[in-house]
Length: 178
Image 1 (tube, rainbow, N blue to C red):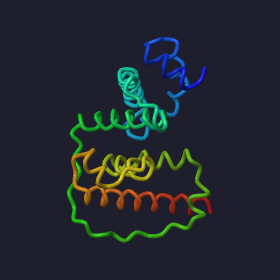
Image 2 (cartoon, rainbow, N blue to C red):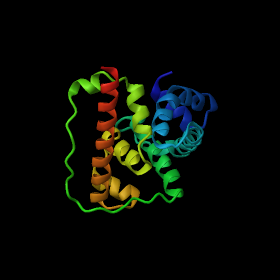
Image 3 (cartoon, rainbow, N blue to C red):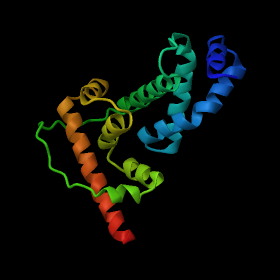
Image 4 (cartoon, rainbow, N blue to C red):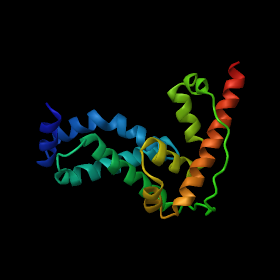
């Protein structure tokens, strides 16, 4: 079955098409949830809620652009709602640029994706969320500010601090590997 046929079947609420859609995209969307969740169980809850929203609103998909991108955006929004329920507080800071050490390109190439994702997962929650939204999902600081109800300058500073922590951790791993 093609993606178009699966989507149309889901619009008609056909369970077989819903199952196919879930099986095709659950892994990719779970990876998104894991980046925002504090643990795998919370990520599973996020994923389940995301698919409920996807199935409830699939009739609003306009068949313009990427269907996977549309589902990914819903999943990110569900994850952010979970985070907002926890009343996550971002500290406000001024918009001064912090200097950060430059990482040699070889440091990244020596790290596997799994190790890098573990390092990101260990970041403090606010840093991790902003890092994910900006670097991985491609949101601007203004969009992040709107999504998280913070100032754009707070988003920028959280990203700078997240990158600095990641750089330090990567450099430490590189020293251990040498």
